[in-house]
Each structure stands twice: as structure tokens, then as C-alpha cells.
Length: 164
Image (tube, rainbow, N blue to C red; front, side):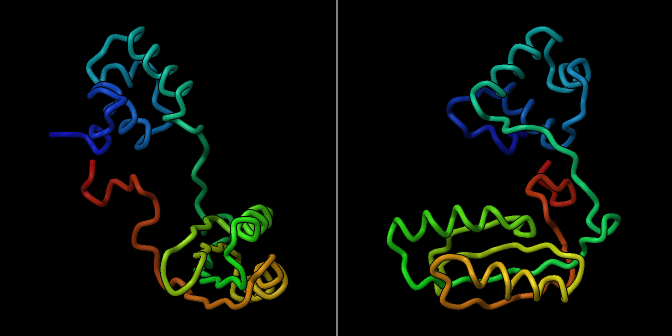
């Protein structure tokens, strides 16, 4: 069965298996990783280091449980800009990166310009972030909010999707 990442021309099937495995378990030891992908330890470690060096792996981090740390409220803010020339986009992009509550920011081709995933402790904090931070970003003309009722799948490598 082909792996999720096997269609990348720059990597072979072993590299793809390494990436798929690490996406599922970033804390796996090199020994266990090698066994899982069918390589001995040294060649697996060499491939791992090359994948990091070449930018296939951006880094490693702990995935926190939002409920345990009091950040259960998720909203998606649709943002329209007054100006979409390159300089305006660069200024907006730089400014939105400074708002810690904005988990993701995507430029969109559609009825609005950006889609922001915003995570806060509650609707009151979201209202503050929207009114005092997002709405005051450069060139923002309007926003519209969609509040998440339930997160069915949040991570692209979620094993419940059947894409393992």
C-alpha cells in the first residue's frame, strides 16, 4: 500500500515511510523507526538527518491538549482587506503573525481574503482578540466569525481518518 507522501519525486519509499511514521509519532526512537520502515539503524539515521537538513521535517513539538490548558474555544475569522496589493498583504501577514491566539492564517481565493483559526479560552476572550487585535490589523475592512461546535479532525495526520 503506498504511503501518503510517496508521490514526492525527491524522496523514495523509505523516506516516505520515515516521514509518515514521524508524523504519527515524533518521539519514536531511531531504533524503533528503523525497524518500522525496514532499515537498519545507521541508514535510517542518515536518512532522518538528511530529511531534517533538506527541510522535509520542520521541527518537533509537543501537541498540547487544548481542554487541559483552557483553550477549548475555536473560531474561524473570515477577513476582508481594503487593499490586496503586495505591500498591503506583506504588512497584514507580518502583523497577524504577532497575535498568539491566531493558530493558523491562510490567504484564500474566494469571497474574503484570509481565513484565521483563532483559539482562546472562551467567547469573551475571542471577542477581545477580534475587536482589539484582528480588526485593527493593517487594511482590515471587515470580519465574519464562524464558531466551532465540535472538532472532528484537527491534525492532517490524524490516524482516525483512515489515511495511515
